[in-house]
Length: 411
Image (cartoon, rainbow, N blue to C red; front, top):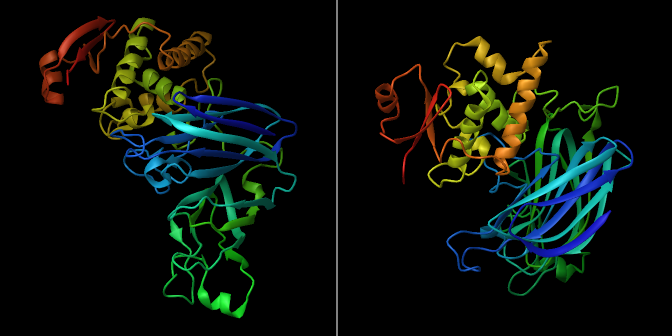
């Protein structure tokens, strides 16, 4: 299933597709991003992808979640307008699925290809593509959401050229795969060289990287210098971690009906992480107060003094008390990580569903901002004086909703 798009996007682009049979799927996303200099701006173009609301982040988690400057995304400062393809290997059930492409501030989308894979252990992908002429930049990235990666094989052609030969760099989970017997091209696993030209050796090469990496997220990057040709790639994985004996995906994405925490908030969609924050902070407040809490978080996301994603804003250290590990409040922790738990109380479940809907509508801008533009708030259990002391600021009171007081600190 191929969709040629070939257009500039400056707002999230949603691509829906159908899967005929549950199993392993390869999703190819090709796009271009330009540098700030090329678009005469202060910022580069960037693009990231979500699949069914699931986003991707850096390997070895950092304090603040990285979503745009990672192998699974497109970064204009590296690409400088050249094409890059990211291939996502994911286990999907039969039915409709969504790829959401989120530019910052814009990007050029080439195409999206969805390929259902028959073999879920030995994956072979024919590519046969020549790189556009350019200097040392990411060209292909292969993303395995959660799997045991046993080996990776690449077939490619590189050519000796008088001034600058073709080269390919292979990076697997941040580790550069070195060329053992070369000092000049130590960090370029495939390199065109003069000696091969003299000996009239074939330029097409095949290399196998034996790994046996553990069950986790994997990024395999191929960087190109000049115009090499990538013929094919093959991956040997352990498919057992993708599925259990019943065919269900083991790595679960929390939903409104099954919101239990997976152990990693990156598995939450933006709507889910915001709903958790509202529920943890104000689950016993009225609807207007919960809407105001959601808006105060959105107001931070849209303010360049804070991070620009809901995950990063909400998870920032000691910003939202529901997420503080230091607070010994088991009830609050349970409410955050498993909002409906084992309760049979229909009112609690309805309240959670309403909170989840609030999160989605606030993200979409479809609800009134009861916080009146606030970026801080506190419960009336503490005084305004104590609140000012805690944050070391004196923001202006702009709204009172339920038992919450909302404040705005101007830039």
